[in-house]
Image (cartoon, rainbow, N blue to C red; front, top):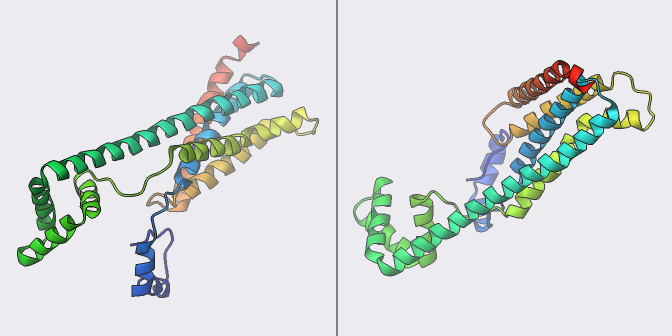
Length: 255
């Protein structure tokens, strides 16, 4: 069944569930999505960079210092988050390979025990009698299908695999692109643009980025875009407010 990312019309649902459409869809190999990596990288980039901007601005330091610390945050935290995503995605792939090796070994060395597992899996789904025997025979007649069923039902692992490098790159690019937004007004000031209230401009631009990215997040979770955007704006604003307050308290130290 296709993943529905928006409310489909009755006619669209009808067209997508004709025998031909179903056959074509099921015949396609699932393509892993990296949009969630991009969205969450964008959220983290905006939050952490604006927190740095807020703290430095609260300490009344120069725009040059803001840019230096902001870029350092972008590169350091962006790479750190991408590396963590890379390693996490790689672990998932390794776990999948390990589970597959275990199932292959068990099917080769103890096939009757594995057949009994298939039998109990399908019995729990409501199969019984000749229908249950037929389902077990069909599944276990094809070794590849047998392995896929065991991985999905016993380990909860599907066939879709995400490439660690692509996941990490999506996160890093989003972190840099969205995380740079809070720095734009201060970069303009350094470039000679007459821009009073640069911090207020940075706050407004970052707030808009928080909301837009949060609204994008709603495509991956069961949440209304307005609520998702508001929640991200609230969380990001709270992080920025804390950093700004710390900067105010330490203003004397910076001076």
